[in-house]
Length: 139
Image (cartoon, rainbow, N blue to C red; front, side):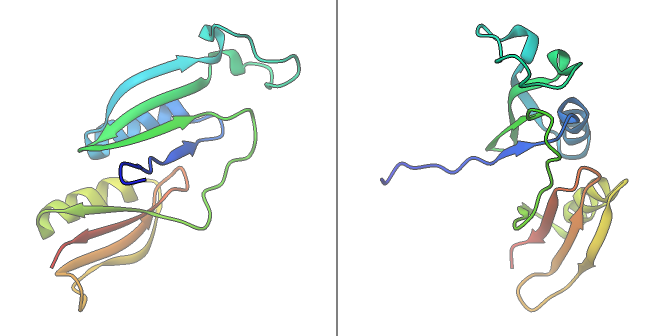
């Protein structure tokens, strides 16, 4: 089990393409792969997808820095991110501020960036897709 990896799989409830564009701009994300439902080699079972979902993202793989994440539009569920946040480490307070500001655009700041006993710069933000982020600079 030494080589296990955990790679977050995020469901965007019909907004995956929009989220990927947002993360490309905000975090420099790179999309490695994207497949729409209509391009699947095996069709979805009848009545599994809402009308219009054939042009939605069935699966995407993207990178932020050296980290691999995956995403999808799901199958029409109201996907809400609960019970976790993604933590992102910046090299400097200036870089943390840039990342935090980009993620906060259209979202909600929960903990403003500030010095803490564990970090020279830490803050918590929820982006416009509901994803929670903890932005920090290692002490």
